[in-house]
Image (cartoon, rainbow, N blue to C red; front, top):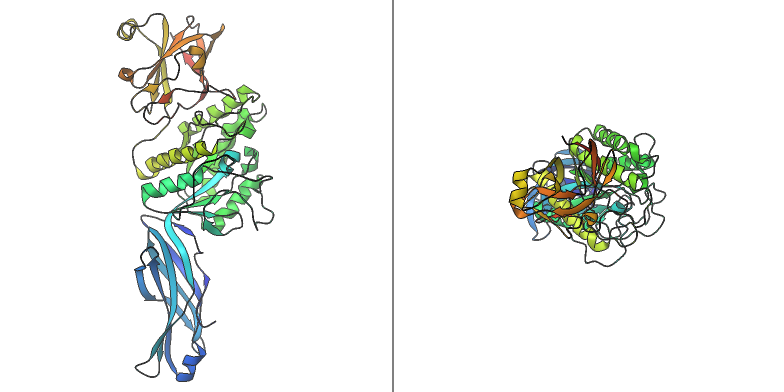
Length: 475
């Protein structure tokens, strides 16, 4: 074909990871002057490239000659050029062949290949199991938006839309779903994060429903290897990894080792990438009539611990999200989760207002003076939390509906009631049925099906991060 043919460069719909507001791309290809021009006579031919903003057809980079041109006979050849493109888009990359005739007043601009709908913004890898792959099959309003693109399982960039883990034309892949996936949290996430940053978002889907962390472990895990393959195909530079996984590891054999396995996963991914990528994780929600409560508590505790102990890991609580079946978030809940995650990413990556789940930091008995101020009697524990905007909102004051459990050397201690108020913004008070004897262990929202209406921050409506058997010693 005459004109310019692109052989290597960005794909249609591709999102390029910006660095300090720009992305660098390289185009390679061939060129060939039209035979009609050769008959008239040609003096010179040069491949040229420009970048156009698609919304208004204004040139972001005007026509520019290729950096490197290898000329061959009959005004054919090869070219290579590098462009620095500012964040934003969507862009159209156009090529052409600027040709001058031997006749001084005659020139031609021959056609060239185009790359369409390219954006410079932020890339995120989606990893984990069913709630990350997207299993919600009920109703919600979550339409596609041109600001969010998806690297589909067929290894092609496209407009992002549900279901995001479908496998049309993908062949045999490790993260192929057995059934038909549904609504994911991450289309909503992408749209919100794009609005916050004024840059498009690219998503790379690698999650699989029902997958245990064993399949994500370095060296032996097929899903880990599949993710590495996607990393290499999409240039290897990203803003973060979105991780929602753990339900399949709540059995007695796997749950005690979840933290170590997740830490190995994080370290291996960072070694592979060569930089300390941020992991945005979500604590487990719930399973109706789920078995082995202790395993759910151990995994949630490991997820809380990872956010505290592994640099560059954050986690969001999810225990106030509705379900569409016994274990999967509803479609509307996933839309809300995506919005919450976008707020947290914006805080972590862009320095906007803090958006974190409240986290327990201290436990002590209330003293007599506090009891007078609060107008309470009896035995009360005072729980202090970090990341509270104003105060906690309680749906019930009944202790058996609080989601908190307390055990000591004599067994479980009844929690008679729960209290919080705006004057004491970062505290929750638990009324106990008896005095604590020696070492005690406090837990919150830890069971397979924990409290249905956990306390939440009055502003963010985020529940505290779940925790399991946190040791407390009260003198």
